[in-house]
Length: 439
Picture 1: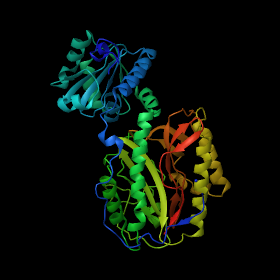
Picture 2: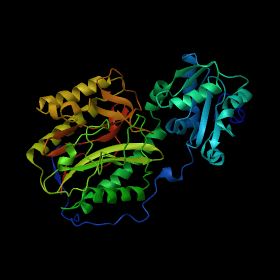
Picture 3: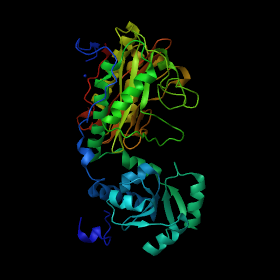
Picture 4: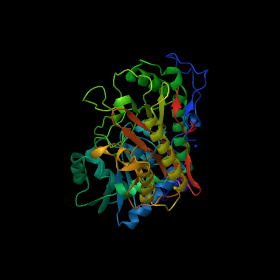
């Protein structure tokens, strides 16, 4: 980037299917120990989003704005702000189709200037002055303005209309989401680091899982370990009213309880106010314990599932798990650039049906989830969606592949890993072996 561009005078802005047994040396008694001073990843000491990343992203957005005949975009949602500006401080990011972007700050401007690589970060005393600030900086208001209409509340939209009178507004959320679906090496590195947190937690489950421990007890201990390794605690989802806390940790029949999230597994939860996840039930021997965990590093998400049990699982669970593992391996092997999501979904569904488990795949009855994978990044529900959708994969897309089976009266089994699409197939980003863990 040139000095002129930095100053704002240019356009720049800155796998085996067999069940395995844990080693005899693995402790079987409970432990509350969490790691002391866990090693920091390289992301801990890295600066905010690199300027070259933000420059590239904004250049692509400008191309899309020009192609759509839009004069500018105004971004406000946290995940989009972080992607394009490197901060989630309360602000509006104004991106003209030609010229440098400006971050108009409501609060906290000092933090935003430290966190964002953008050159133009300016204070905005009130949202009532946004239109005047844009006119003063750019000479005129846009006639055609792109907004994130998939997530922007109507009340806020009405206020923005008053700031940009006469402007034609258009939804650019699809454009933004498609651009965000393809990750750079920088982003893949952060997702790999997030997967590393899950690896650390998963390795400690055999020390903590024992007969009689309650789901919520064990979940709390595992969540504390994740925090000690740098889990940031906030899991962003774009879908309205979709919520998640670290993931789903469900055992036995609790794994068969459906609920409102768009997920194959949910669990009963501790109350109807949350209606998903752990309960206070005690974990017994010979039942599947599903560790479905979402880790976050520098805002980026990795999604992961492994199944544990105290002693051998019933044959029906073992067989269903073997089919889930086969699905993951075969889908990942053909998930290359240009392959349609629908082709991958048909492959997964066909394998489940060939094994006689089609009616248990990704749920049961009307509650079956009609997908087998979803994109991850700054949000848990990104593109691509591995479903009956005629959308091709692209090099650099990252998705969580999660073939799972629900066995009524018994529990749930399955596997999930986060993959990056490469010309040679999908590369798994976690380090934990894709297998069943019978302790």
